[in-house]
Length: 329
Image (tube, rainbow, N blue to C red; front, side, top):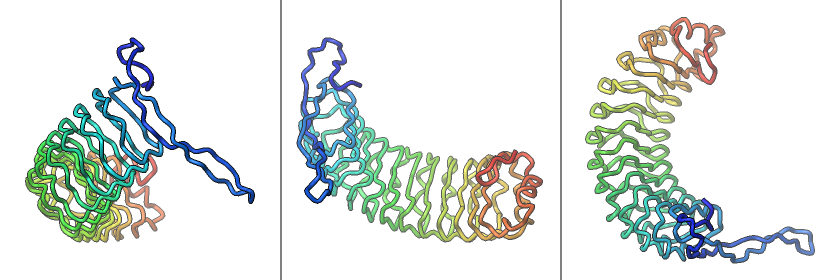
């Protein structure tokens, strides 16, 4: 959308101005290049419903008070330290503050129509300030400094929760999020799968790169379609008896030496079990029972040393479409 174009087409819309820093390149007497930053104004149509100001070197949220029609505001990749001056934007559905310098979630209580909030890649240590955002459907908080899952259990409309790349040790305080369909907790410090029994609508669960040693407590998640458990310390594939709707299972980069307990997963189309300790073709043979399997990753296991590696896989599963990163046919 052209920021100077009036949605109604009459050309008489008021113009709001947002200050940004703009650089002018120079060179000193020693030949060293430098940039002088100057404040400039960006003109914005006050009837705008969408506004994208990413990479504008903004260090403060200000001068948005008259943008009462705004539904989507993107302030990615700036230098913003504080969430402020947004209280008048009650029509806002999406707020994107990805990759700034924010340390605290605050001043959002009036944004009751917010459905999507992205605060990934900031410096947030605690989940707070979301008490009034009861219509929130997607919450992104990846790559922060969060140590504990708190203050989200009231977000009953939440469908997607992204908490990857933090310092979380325990899965907790999300039992009321029964509408959740996607939960991302990769790259944390979680050592046990637990407290997920009520999330019966969950379709995607990511626990990659944690400290797990056992697959457990997933029996209530009967709608689960994608399960990501790579980069853990898992030794046995087990306790998936009730997860019969799984389509994707990622067990790569673990300590598994045997493929087992998965022949009941008749909807499985992708199995990632590369970078493990599988060395016996006899237990690979059980894959012949997975007639819908399209993609298999087995590279970086001891069996890869077999010169007939790909041919043997195709003999076991003539229907396979992809072996590792290469098409089978």
